[in-house]
Length: 162
Image (tube, rainbow, N blue to C red; front, top):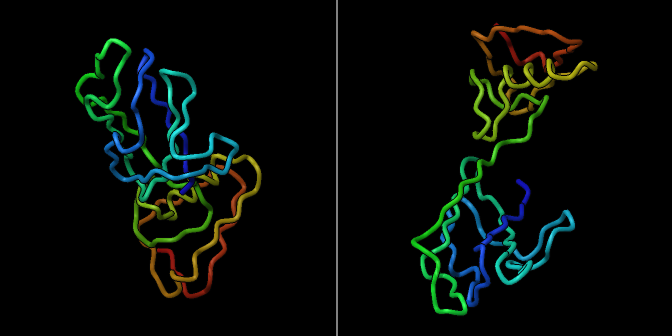
């Protein structure tokens, strides 16, 4: 999972804000991000806006809450009760089947045959679906194989689809 930058905008000049004033679920604050975004865990864009770099620790929602009274204006006013935001972290689409489970769930970190076929069908070019070696000997059953583009399904002889 790749880190990302979250923008926190108070809408007015504030003082005293730092990353310790964030409550995080399913993420940690990191020092740098790889895609040329701001370095450091917290970067002031201006007196009212900050960037914080977050690293998801799992698929699913990343919840970020700014604690109440986390920042103060020139007049001594503080931000209201915790303001929250949620970012959904989903897996990258793949043509490599990593589970014999049926269905499609973009937050489980696995790729089912149905997900791989849906991804292949979204590409008008030829796609090759393969199977992770961990599925050797596994059976994938009850899957409706609806192919609408040029797709090759290539697997070890130890994987059965019924």
